[in-house]
Length: 219
Image (cartoon, rainbow, N blue to C red):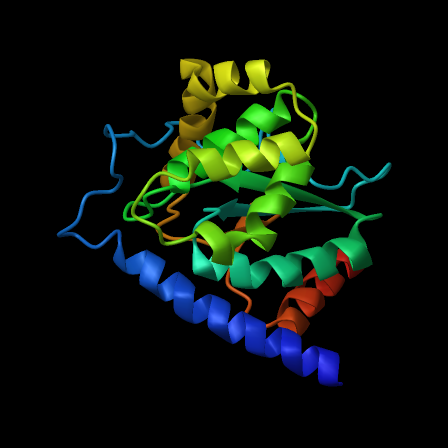
């Protein structure tokens, strides 16, 4: 019971922080801090190239999260996602997609850092590292590239390759591809979740768990 209350409190904090992220896409503010990114014409919640956190032998459901590693709401939702993965990972495919938000100075860099790690087979490890250390680097105005390089060293990455991949235009394009899908699907803030293609907004771990249970049970 106590654990459920803690998770519920975490989700309340996540939703409050996420609301702040939604405001970043108000009509009076730019959609992103860099070049304009057009929504994908054939937007999809998940693609073959999307990063999967779980790959059950027989997947019965797909949960997709569009996220920003610097977003406090995503950081607050991270423990919930981990708990859902632990409980349903053998039946549900969990997918993480990049959606760095404007106003987060290191959001795009963080996404490229994770993608560079993914090129060396360390997507999940860097994904977890950035969320569990978010309080140490998030909301900074200066670049945290040195901090992220330190994490890459801790994960045992080939640093010459990591540095090359971090600056590779193809890495930025991979992040933007997720953003284009998100924009095409109506994503305006983070975290935004989709369950088998349907956008959902669960307010607590219990709500999300029940939603998954209902979908797994079928009609």
